Length: 193
Image 1 (tube, rainbow, N blue to C red):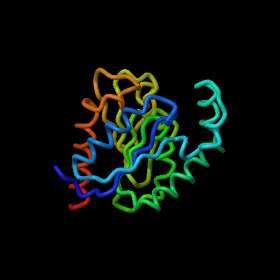
Image 2: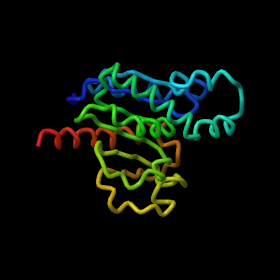
Image 3: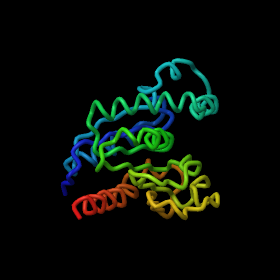
């Protein structure tokens, strides 16, 4: 089934190429089968200077969540979005947080999807376009509703919870892809209406 979105940009989790990247290729292949052209951005593409230093995952995480590093990643992702004329932006975990930050670079009818992006909890309510389509495993302890975040007034936030999954939901394409494609289809219908 083809969708009107032409170009999808996928943004990796915080590990970039330094983690298990099979999910990125699986997502790309699955989206190509729907008629999309895909490009992959690994976090180490956006922040190469940070990944040159060896350190633990905890040290990497600490660096990535500073406002200065996050802002730099957002700026560089905005450049990629403009360069590739992105219609669909999907960010995984920390990549979703960076994607959320870069949303102003998207064209008016573009689609933004954040999968396992727990830092959205700090961004609610979302009160401006584009609508954020968020996907979480029901067992993810850091998903916004698990932490009691109030979603009232979040009129540009659409959350889908997938049962039987934790934070690693985005790595299970067979469980996550169907609801993602359904939201993409619904977004398409709303653009036409």
